Image (cartoon, rainbow, N blue to C red; front, side, top):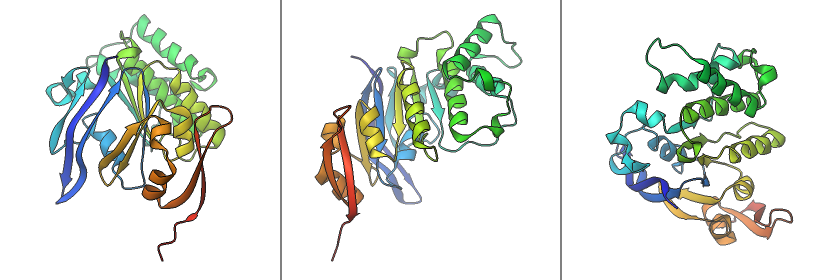
Length: 266
């Protein structure tokens, strides 16, 4: 299976502080990959480095066989869509926000055509947003807003392209959502057919949803592997500084973590 993205010896230093330190990993096409780690471990910086938001101090990010810094920002945006953890105010209707996914593909002042409208309509229907398409984005709940942004990503990545060759990056998309909406959101993303890299706080959610997990700590990758390989009691206890037991979930058979009190350092 070919890779969607290869990261090679990526480092980022700012103000004499190392944020990312010699990071290398590869993700195969079609995989749903979670990035986990404590706050400040480098998760968000890593995701931003994969889509040209930050310029690394060293290393390469190879997207579909080409270095992202040898491609234009528009060309990268045709292959990678990003759903951030916090949403800036957008005084637009839902259908207009979804249509913004066309921006990398259209020339300035170029009109939308029938196929564009079909793509927008399909994305709205796929995320069950038909009843909300004329609502103002800023009036929606957090879960509804996340669905709108995923629909926008579908338009961005699906414009005359197969989603199989596209990458969706999501930075803590389930933050501040009720558990029902967390599960619903990640299930919808799983069904898109594109490669996904998502940072998650909830380790049990990562275990349930992800094909692979990348554990980041102090700007370095500790391990990349299956949930069974990554989520071991010793490793999670060491990184997160909590007591943890791991059992097999009775439904999906993946690791399920049971946390207790903070470790005693006395």
